[in-house]
Every structure is written in C-alpha cells, then in structure tokens.
Amino acid sequence: MAVLLAATCGMAGCSGKNSDDAAGASVTPTNVTLTPDQRKNIHLYTVASATYHRTVDATGSVDFNNDKATAVLAPISGPVSRLLVDIGDHVKQGDALALVDSPDYAAAVTTYRKALTTAHTARRLADLEKDLVEHQGVAKREEDQAQADAANADADVDAALKALVSLNVDPKVIKDIEQGRPIAPISGVIRSPTAGTVVDRQITPGQLLQAGTTPCFTVADMSHVWVMAQVADSDVASVKPGDSADVSTGVDSQRLTGTVTKVSALVDPDTRLMPARIVVDNGQGLLKKQAYVAVQIHSREEAKGILVPVSALLRDDENLPFVYVAQHDGSFARRSVTLGHRIGDQFDIPAGLQAGEQVVVDGGIFVQFMQNQ
Image (tube, rainbow, N blue to C red; front, side, top):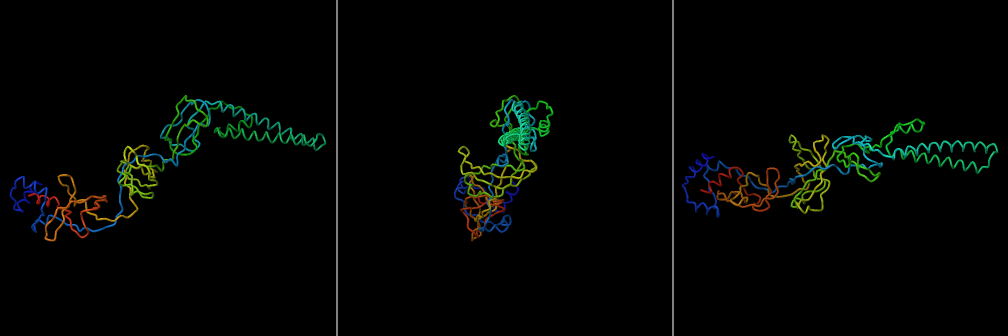
C-alpha cells in the first residue's frame, strides 16, 4: 500500500503541504482532477432507478409450534411412581410417559366388575320374566320392569367400560376382567395423546397428581417449528405474512427456509423490537427449542430507489457516508449521501444522488488520497 501511495504521489507531482491545508481540505473538500493515467485506476458506475425486494436482517429464537403442541393433563389422581420419558424424547401416540400409584384404577376395575355381574344377573332375570309371560306365569308389567332393569345395567357396564378406557387401561386387562380372570395390581399410566417430541415435563417422582387439572407433559410435533424473529420497528413495514425467510442454524452454515405467518401488533417495551413468527420446516431436527438463529426475511413487495454498489461508499472523519461523483469537466466531487436499506451488495440511496450520475465504484480510496494531497 505504501508503494502504491508513493507511486500515486509521484504521478501527481505532489509536494508536502502543511497540516493546516489538509485540515482545511477535509472541511471543504475541492473537486479532484486526475490525469489520464490516473483515471485508469478507477471505474465508474452509472446510477439508475431500480426496483428491488427488501431483505430484512434479524435475530430470532426457536420455539415449538404451539398449533401442533399438546398439553398432557393427569388423567388420574395419585402420586407419580416413575417417569418413563425425558425432555427431547420422541414418542408415538399411546406411548407411556409416566406411572402413577392411583386408587382410581382399583375403583374403576371394581366398578366394571360389579357392573358386569349386575348386568348379567339383570339380563338373566329379564329373560326369565319373558319366558314366564309367554306361559301366563306373571303379569306383562313385571316383564317390562325386568327389561328396564337389564337395560339400565347394560348402560352401567358401558359407562364403567368408558371409564377404564379413559384411564388408558390395557385392552388385554379389560378382556381379562370381562372373562372373569384374576388380574395383577396395575399402575396408572399417563400416555401420550399424540406423536411428537416431549418438549416440557412438569412433574417429578412422588408428586401428587390431581385428575384433570395437573399438567404433566407437553408433546409437540417438531417437524415444523416457530422462529420468533425480532424485527426493528423501522423494518416492520417491510415484513408481511407470506414473506419467505432464510434461517441460519450455525450448524455447517446450513440454511432452512420458512414463511412469515404473523407479525405482532405490539412492540417489546424493553428491546423496542417487534416479534415476527416464522414457520420453518425442521424435518432434519436441526433447530432446537430456545436456540438463537440469524434470520433474513425477503419482502414480496417491490420497492423502487437508487441502488449503488457497496464499494462506492466511503466514510469521512465523522463516519458519515459519501461517494465521488463524476463532473462534466472530468473532475470528481465528493458528495454526502443518505444510506437506506442494503440489498445484497448494494445500498438504496434515498438522498444525495440522481439517476444518470456516475460514481466511482472501484478506486474511491485512490481518489480520496489524491484529494487529501
């Protein structure tokens, strides 16, 4: 770099100026005129109005898809005797999640046995009454009463059976009860109502559960997850439901695609950011709950503006952006610009340039050096 600058200084025929002159040039810069040989070191870009689609950069965190997550409540009361799964385990529908020492099972089994016995006796008596009526042995109303008793007993059997099924009792155990075979003491089982991944566990061994009210697990389908992107309020107008998004996992630089499904109407009072929900296909299981990810949201709406390559932009002593614009007399003027959104390797310039003007895109540092001589 030192050799290049020395050569440049030689081509320009420059001599050392005092520091006051340099300071004055930085405050009110004059146009730069280059020789034909010096112009070979730069390249120009003709500014034009263009349409583009904004890309919004944001950070986000992974959450499970709450639309495909099921909270598992305790179906029975009693203390937890054993946990069978942990967070992150994959389960199928009907898989056992935990065992419970519950008196509900004994009560349900006893009720079903009694209902079966009562129904059998009531049906036998109803059939006997019917036979007696046919042979003029009893009045018809006594047969009607017997039939009603048998029907009520059958209804009790059905209710008791449904109670066992709701407790997820093994069908083989139910069949043993129906056939009058003895059964071993059984533990209450909390089973998964759906297939998925155990994403939350809220019980511990020995904990007393209350049927229908104690939350035990959350099972979610992790094949699709939510990424909650935090969008700056200045970018919210460019993010709409239906926009596509790229999510960087940080694992082997892999990117997953998703779709924006919702943009929050509320700004986080602490961060001044607005959450946008993105549904991402997670078939390979790369995204884990609560992981941080980088997000790029691609707006479907077209925008129009003046686009300039990033290489054309320089910074002054106050870190403000400027470019060098070619003038009609062949010189180059330093002009401050306003930066808008970045689109790939270009910036939108809301103010400072007009279509048709030419800016230095390669060699701007050289022009700046020449200006400071």
